[in-house]
Image (tube, rainbow, N blue to C red; front, side):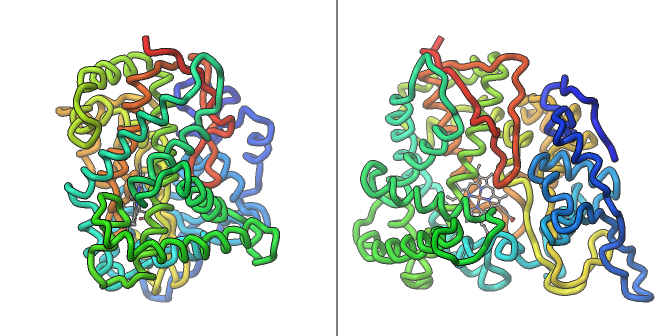
Length: 475
Ligand code: HEM
């Protein structure tokens, strides 16, 4: 097994190599791999078997996945190539890594790949675009596009940027606090007026708490609807949310507001009230944790790289007299580079999950129907053949002449690719920039040179220590 030295000494090394400096990880590295084929290819097909690792009985290499995320998948790719498989908690998952394998699966030319999310996380995306397939998906996505056009985004961002300023003003100065929960709460505070037209302080807080219940249930191992369990509580929260959102649709349609629910409700009757509620619920789920994770990553890297923080702040201050919103955010070119690089290194949604709808192959490797396929998009963002010194935080790699992201269209994939590519990409980038712009204009912060965030990958990536930070009045 490829191991790394006992001590992490290089910047972001544990994002690209499995870190064995903790005794538990050193022990995990000695897990027997028990390699073997996924399935025998049909006789005469000329296809090769997918080779992968079974690992421990039942758990397989699931714990390695949670602790090391993309670094574990890079290791798998080094062992078996761009198409492999591993067992995680009783399931065999095919890993498609590197640009060629990602292209084959995500573009889905042969219609062999359906959404794999419902099979992995449960019913939490049901009725949302990411759980839909084929014509139903295409039809709903086309209709929803109008809720993401330039005018609609300008409306959402006016509100979000103003709310970011207002809520960040309440953050503590001069004492240590955990940035992860604070940024998660801020994401909710920026969401409820812009997406639902309700203030966070009253109704919004309850809605976001219920959304978080659904999000946390996605990774539950115990999935019985037994009262008292996380799974059961999340089901009840989802039911309440759907009823509540459906009840809001008629008023949202009438008020001609700038919020997402109002815009979506005016798109016509094609979805029906229940359909709007389901799309709205998925939009809330899809937008909340992803943008939070992107903001966490950027806060971390800005704290590690004061020179970039100064550059970004200078730009934010220069535009501070402009009204909050899309136009001002578009002027923040340095921040754009910083966010792109932050989500290259720590991809908020590091895999795209698919399920084979029929027997197929990936790069000539046989994958039978009914198998989960994880497109390891974050792996592509860390490959040395696509990104020189991939572990280094270097936002300029996205700038003008270098444009390392443009050399291969499947190299930078934080928002996925193909028919399910994130429809909220511009919205998401703008929201994260609004968060950082508000922080930069008010505070400065730094992390010790020796500090390396302990990223974990149970759900979306997050530092397990909550990212302790001390904010200082802007220097
Ligand atoms: C930095 C923030 C974000 C990241 C990194 C992100 C990432 C992604 C990724 C990787 C996918 C595709 C997943 C797959 O192929 O399996 C996706 C899909 C989606 N995202 Fe985002 N997202 C972000 C923000 C948002 C926001 C703000 C919204 C809405 C307001 C949103 C709504 C959606 C929707 C509706 C889909 C499903 C699209 C479809 O299936 O056609 N996302 N996102």
